[in-house]
Length: 238
Ligand code: ADP
Ligand code: MG
Image 1 (cartoon, rainbow, N blue to C red):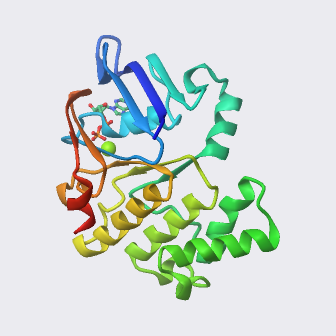
Image 2 (image 1 turned 90 degrees about the vertical axis):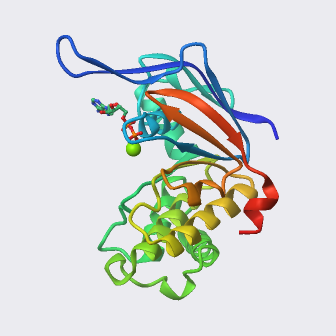
């Protein structure tokens, strides 16, 4: 598969006070390349820079130095307005807390995302239904978030992410609120999504979840300290 995402020489500093600067990501001379359809997992201890890296790759945050490309688009060179538009059309995000709209049903939550990229009416409904089926929630389509378990809400959030037909889905600790069995169900869905052709980048600190990826990179103090490919067979057999 061709490379989809490239990050070069990334540096992200946060200034805490006059003299205190935190280097959250520090890839001096290091590059990171992620293939189309790859399921990349980012691991590392708390505070190692995982969320910062995800946000830089996903155009949620801008680096202090360095560049991020998705396809031929250099995110770091886009104006705020163009970056927002690029994110809206090509990128989706799933977070630890599902952030569904509580006053809308599952299918309405998914349809809103479809509407954002111009998929409207009956088509939006049918696609939303199909994505909810894909995550195993066809029977919950007309339920409100409060009527669903954490795992079910997270699956709605994944269906919502899919509704835009994004190139990349960025996922930060999607299973942190879930028990192991439910968490594994969620990660297996993410694996399927990547096998269907969408690039998935997931932060987790749970080794059991990480092994569903194609590759794990380990961060420490803002640097990539290790990178490991996962045998395709071993993950499929789980
Ligand atoms: P992780 O997701 O691996 O736990 P983060 O990427 O959230 O780590 O944070 C990396 C480092 O950057 C930490 O030292 C954290 O305190 C710091 N940091 C993250 N976000 C901010 C921020 N908005 N302002 C100041 N420091 C931050
Ligand atoms: Mg984090």
